[in-house]
Picture 1 (cartoon, rainbow, N blue to C red):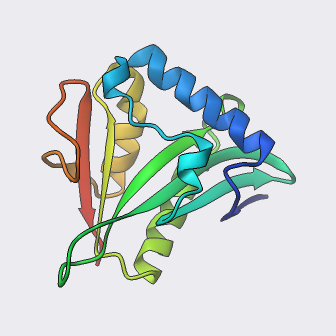
Picture 2: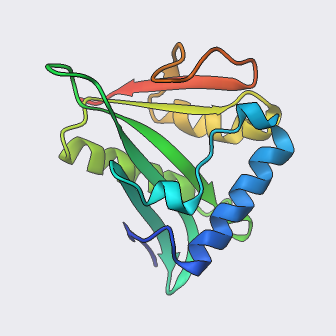
Amino acid sequence: MIRIERDDPGRLDVQKLLGEHLADMYATSPPESVHALDHESLSGPGMTFWTARQDSEVLGCCALKQLDAGPGKEKQGEIKSMRTAAHARGRGVATGLLEHLLAEARRSGYEQLFLETGSQEFFAPARRLYQRHGFVDCPPFGTYVPDPNSIFMTRVLP
């Protein structure tokens, strides 16, 4: 049984998974187009981090970063560090993590979520996952700027 729970990005097994994530990002995108976060950044304020585990083995992770929307504006967040371990792909881990994150975001009062992912073929499975869950393309958000290596997506939460 796969359990999805809040976790500490500083745990050694999570650090290893995040290291693999960063290595893949730098192998597929130019450095200026890599927006993945390390474990220290994922432990910072405004971040909520989850892992998917079977028994004690980490299968994947994801994070929700609260965005500064300004006074009187809707609560917005950004999905960060969605990652499934290579050996766990095809088992529904990413779908489970994304559905859990969406439910938690709704429960926490988020009204809109954003994400940035790569435009390269390597990222096509991630883009399909997000599209299946109602995300649509949008312009750059927050501090992002237009980048041919990035695709920006959003979803309004009911």
